Length: 219
Image (cartoon, rainbow, N blue to C red; front, side, top):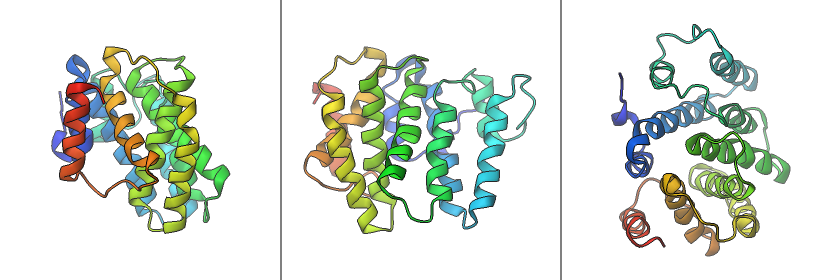
């Protein structure tokens, strides 16, 4: 069985470390999100980008388990039974916004956040009927993350603004213990969003310290 932790972004690797017995599943789903991010980052032709995302949708939808054999992340997800995780099709929809839209308006940001963030948190939580507050938390996280990687300052600021507007939809819920990595990810994002700050690029020393504090004391 494969465990491609060396390819994971440091934040994803640290968050997955708090998933207990589900750590490998979390790592594999974060690796999938990184695959989608790579498509968005490296695609200059929207039609080609859509074709690449459509290929992934075909793999995820393949009940026979044949499509995509040989692709490392596909093999990994299939081996641990996570390729059919709820939320993955929504993740594809969210990433598609960044691939096909030449200019992303507020509607596009909402669609991206709901798909990429809501879908990712749903997949990591492994619940078909995720509570609205969890989807909202995923939206906030995805918008915060986008603010770190967008080369468009106006778009990054709009993402943080929308994320701030979404905070009341999350409220102060009781997070199941199994969702600890999601709670940490959300609280990392909320810290910056409340201050109208963009996410840092990469795992900074300050973020690592905040992650450890949240993991230990819950805030």
